[in-house]
Image (cartoon, rainbow, N blue to C red):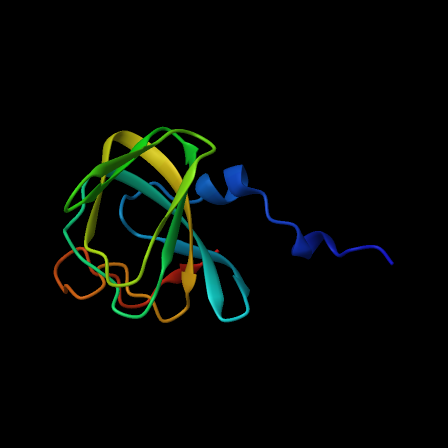
Length: 124
């Protein structure tokens, strides 16, 4: 049985469809989880997710995940899982392309609501 071409997702093509930062796009869904792509640059806000773990996988560039007691530096091809309830602040000195895997219920700013909060995510 041959898979349908619509089942395959090309990350580079999806990333070419947008240019803004800190506005994740949904590119897949499985078992109540969203697969998201985002372009990050600069500093985000300190926040946590009460009930959700969050995976950050760097596709291009570098990303630092600041935690209250340390900083995790991620290079291309590396990922880090922020456990639920752990305060964190993503920082990208230069533009980074990131894949996120997290429950569909996850709000990008977690327990914080501000001008960076994206209530409804676009699906590509």
